[in-house]
Amino acid sequence: MALVLWLLMALVPFVLGKGVLRILYGNQPTQKLGLADSMLTGGIVVIGLAEAAHLGACLLGRSFSDCVKLLGIGVVVCLLAAVVVQLIGSHRDKKNPVLQREMQRKHVKRQLTVNYTKAQVIVYVIFGIIVLVQFLTVVAAQSVYLGGDMTLETVNSFLATDTIYQVNPMTGKPYSLGIPMRLKILCLPTFYAILCQSFGLEAATVVLSIVPAFVLLLSYLAFSAVAGVLFPEDAFKRGLFLVLTALLVGVGDYMVGMDGFGLMHSGFRGVTIRGAVLIPYALGLVLRRRYKLAVLCILAEACIVWTLYGMGACLVVVTGVLLIRFVIEWLEKRKGRKEGAICKNS
Image (cartoon, rainbow, N blue to C red; front, top):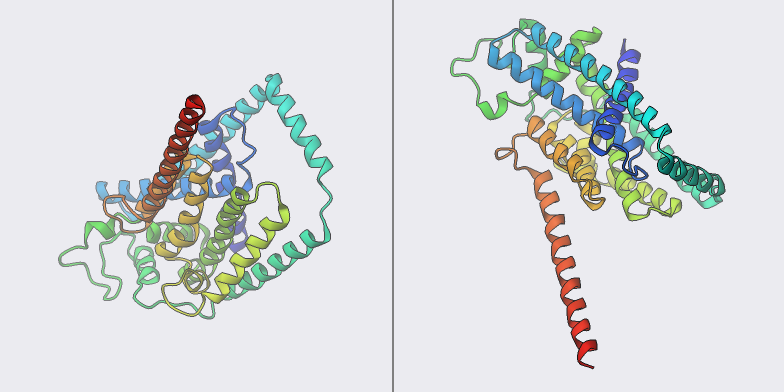
């Protein structure tokens, strides 16, 4: 069943992401929206569905089993909708002569540049080897850091009691005063428990091995999107950027709180997903002016990590880049007006 889970964790986000991208951007040029965008957007959608099922069960006082059913129904409905949207969109694309010419031009361009240089091959092989070693290390789950975290215990409490946040996972007894709402609204423990029950896997396998390994791969997809923004026409520089990123993950594996440490030892935590996936992806999106998807990153963070009413790190990153862009554009316009005035006076 673990293999089935792996396959679905790759397939479901991809299909959902393709559908969402089609809805958000329609027939707009999508040369900058590739596999990474589909996977990451689909992953964010899954988080949103898990949050909806989690809140629905909590607010309505339903059991954990009901929450599993809610998420299952939501995922199936959204998958069907995504497939229908894609089929309709593909049919329309075939009737759009402008889009067909653009796609043909891209196809010819890819054929002309399909030959990779030796340097490009080497840099991507190095990157692949580093990622493979890190992936196998994380899957082995031999050095998981659990300090100050109760995710595994919380997941086991959901599975054992068929309730959500009704039993203290450390004592096994009901909460006497409840838990803070800021923690109760977070959906990751519920999502992990749903994966365990749906696929008949132990909580330790899902939380400490499968999820962290998948988060590691998503992190590199997020950084690959950033590399595409920084070096859109240079495959070697994109590969080198990814190699340096992978090396930094290894170098950062020395201290709690570092993104590298989080990816290698506690990839199941919300703070790790935020720092290693959502923040770099949000940065890449705002640099590409894909603001709709950037908003989804902000919302996803609010579902998995406590933020100040949704105002978390992703919002800070997006707002900061927008302010910098606004200042630069304002200075350029001001400089242009001054140069125009000088030319006019002369």
